[in-house]
Image (cartoon, rainbow, N blue to C red; front, side):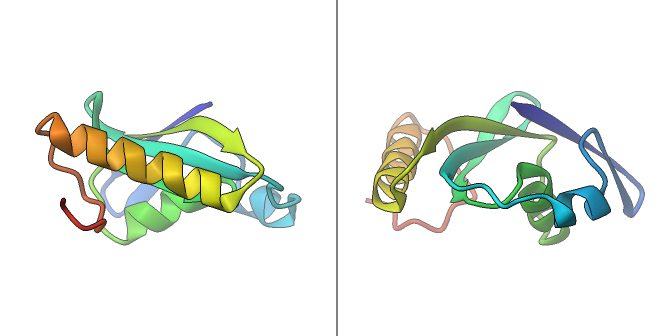
Length: 106
């Protein structure tokens, strides 16, 4: 699933369900590992049980600069999801890519 967010001034135009629809929707039962992209390049990895539209809006409002949120994998166990996220962050940083994540740089 790929959701693209296009900023227009201070307003966020999104191609996903409305906030009211998302608020009433059942929460995800699985942990989703996702990434944020800017012009096709990875800028952030994360995990959530929330709807990706809602999580993307939270990132946008916190000032993260991205244009796409992309689901990578769904997992039943939060520990496994965290391990996947940390591995992706470390491997991407090893490749020389600067990420917005706050995971310690080893």
